[in-house]
Image (cartoon, rainbow, N blue to C red):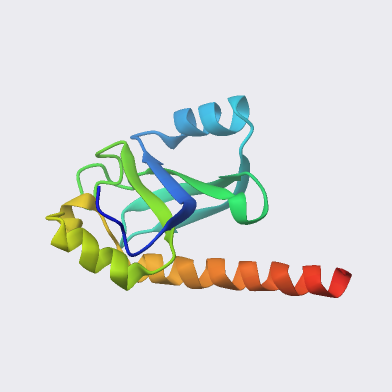
Amino acid sequence: MPNRPFRVLGLQQIAIGGLDKSALKHFWVDLLGLEVLEAYQSERDNVDEEICALGIGPWRVEVDLMEPLDPARKPAVHVPALNHVGLWIDDLAAAYAWLEAQGSDLRRAGFAAALAVMKFVSFTRVAQSRSRRAARAS
């Protein structure tokens, strides 16, 4: 594979959908021990979800457990069941351009550029904050 002009820094998020999120919550929270951070509902996005997490610090991964408010409406957050995966990317513009040049249909692949930019900025702030704390401690 050719050299990529960007790096995938890590996994940010996994969103899992089903018709009944209580079964998802039982598996992921009750059996596997993920922490529930908050609940979120949106009529516009047709979603009722539990936002959970596993891991700590910059390795923390968000796991969204989603069910549709109305299964007959779009967006259908339960189809497919693995709704989306979020990645930390160091140079989003380069990644987008390079992947398109490789023939990837980024719309079909679920590549959400604006969301990824926000998440990368957030990741950068976390890394800078950790770096400042480490410098003060030494």
